[in-house]
Length: 231
Image (cartoon, rainbow, N blue to C red; front, side, top):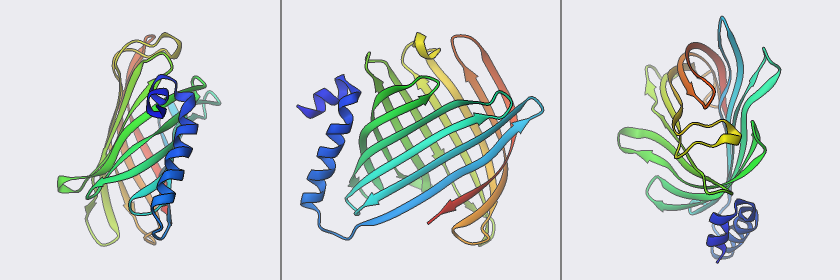
């Protein structure tokens, strides 16, 4: 009953999420851990574009059940506006070695203040490829998706090269968000970081970004400088 309401109306996701977490807590008395990671805190830009971007995650729970908070977005220094920003609250259940199934809700803060239901998988694929995937369903039944792939290449014990690909897609046009069906954003690049400490690593890199909407289609090459933090 709760699942059907969740899919049909994402606003009910907060109630469902609380129910899932309460049920998990009642059946799991193992030690509770907490992990925070700011995978990207960075400046990204070129001669015509200046963005500050973030990609942060925090989970609390056991090996089997976790509560995840995820936020991703960017701020344009040129226009003094947020280009994209969202917050996800997810219940995560371990379903296989290195793989979690996740369900919850997303609050899109910019460009539209909307709620989406979220269903996704996160884990480690063969050859140590990090995978974070999610399907978003809004109140009108529109479906969007996001897939992020990452890989870490150890050049030395402290110098690490991280290729990264992110793809955002939409199943149909969404007029109020200016979203065009198909691939709405493609981002591919790399970050070369130096771990001063394991928990603190500044980095530099490059990104190729291609964006498509109902209004325009653009692509650009951007330089990146930032820091990765976790604890």
